[in-house]
Image 1 (spheres, rainbow, N blue to C red):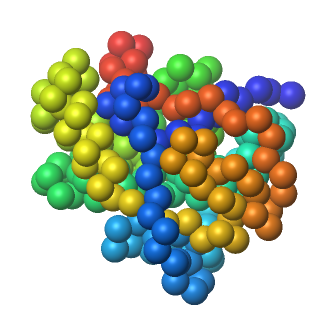
Image 2 (cartoon, helix red, strand yellow; image 1 turned 120 degrees about the horizontal axis):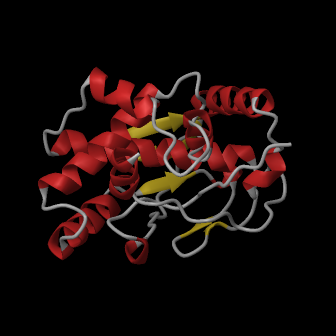
Image 3 (tube, one colour; image 1 turned 180 degrees about the vertical axis):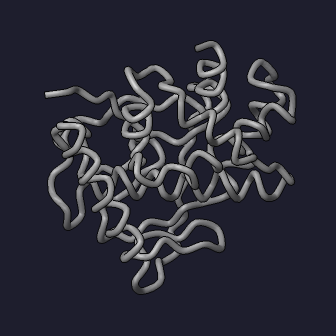
Length: 209
């Protein structure tokens, strides 16, 4: 049985800057979450969960290693992806297909590119939209001065938290400090998983490979 090091934390300019936010506005019917002006439908979430479950089976990974129900793990990734992409679009940052192709070959801190995607809640069968958003977020931070700049870190934290996800209570209760603290209608969460590194740190590690 393979092991998987998972992450369920928002990206920011550094680990000390993780500051998840979610406003209390009711979620519209049929939505699993709303991020800014974009909606994650319950059907879209179901499709993504099914793809991710199939990928875990193929990789012989026990879903129990995620530490939370798959629905929460994938939903958080989907909302984070939207936040990354909205910020990249706002600041005119684009990502080329070649850059995505290169990212697909990178294992990050994992033993393979496939495992790197799985730790982020991404099915290797459909990774390009997520990688486009993640790379775009990293390029925004570089545009502001890079990972070593406190000003860039503060700016990213401000922009990221301005895009507030609202989760349907059907999928659990989400708090700024702890993430999902109950499983809603989808099972019992275990111990919280490890934090995910910010996208710009992931990009640096990939470039060093």
